[in-house]
Image (tube, rainbow, N blue to C red):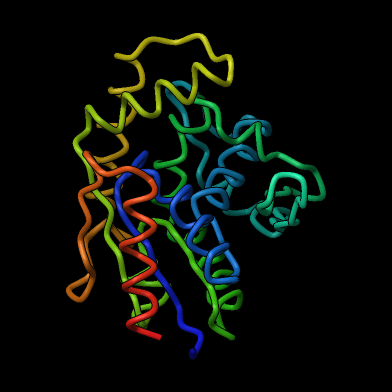
Length: 227
């Protein structure tokens, strides 16, 4: 079969990354978590005191973009690529609620998006790639052979995210997670640069009541039909 580009977009905490990882593994494709790239920039901003409660020095972040180098290295033990920032493994560090709280404002910055989109397009130039994010099918790969738009209710997504964070040892409330999910939805959907929208030719999947296995089975059939 011919290799294709698979673009998976959708709201936060819909399980896009989990599905994309497994789909890529089944197809022997490269998987790229673009959300991790934006989280990496956010992590950098937090640790350089460029963003925090009540402030965001976006101009300083833009000035320092040339100092931000994001790479992915495959971890055989885990079975997926982990994200590195300037040579440091930050895979676990970027999955905190603190990073989640600030990633959407960082992602609204056009210069940040331009830098990361250029990297993402280079990653997919030879096809055989599964990429998930917010604007993959609309901006990064508008000509992708298969576009998926994942959705689920805010409550369902918050419950999933809450369980995931508790399992990682984070001490927080469900209400905090729900507020984070709804706030990110609002920012992602209303930003001026590349807002979260469903591409006209994307296939929408509401996975509120679907198992991971059911989702993978559906996407595998779609991918094979497009290839």
